[in-house]
Length: 260
Image (tube, rainbow, N blue to C red):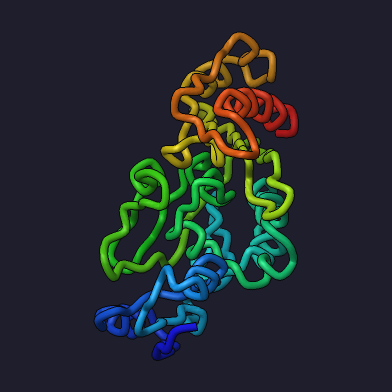
């Protein structure tokens, strides 16, 4: 492990100041950053822990919105986000117990791993990502594999989820990591359906617009039976071909609709 300075601010303002230092890196759950540092693929000179900021932890409900602090662990979301059962169930299926007790929602979203679960919930729910400087709509936040709209030194402080009428998340696990080989989050709102897919595309999480249109007209698995998912941009690796993942998108969407 490399030498680094460790800072644990108690406020968002102090965290922003600390991150202005040369070579500073934010640390939330550390489930990606820590092993990356061990491999010397990341060499920050200052680690700024966000876990001491009480304002960034916890789950709250107001009206039809569930707000999750960015430093809230997956285990806490699974336990406390009961007003949004699909989100709580998704969080409860991330990784293993150790990962769920350390990993955080904000860390996952800032990293935007193409196989992470949370991005599909945020995009599928039409959630709002709140930072120390602004609010970012989910459709504008995710910009490709490991890429987001976050600017240098900007910190995710919370995520606000409008609770849909019905929702469900179904994923096909990569058995070793429990990342989503492919995962689909479906949410039905009064004005239509959103379908977000993770783990399948080289472009990261995405919305399947054809399925959204079909399901908005008829919310049933049969509504997508005639649709075909293009495999052009799908991930192909030792776990599955591009065509395999394209087929998983359709199969899992149908299962998510049925589960919802």
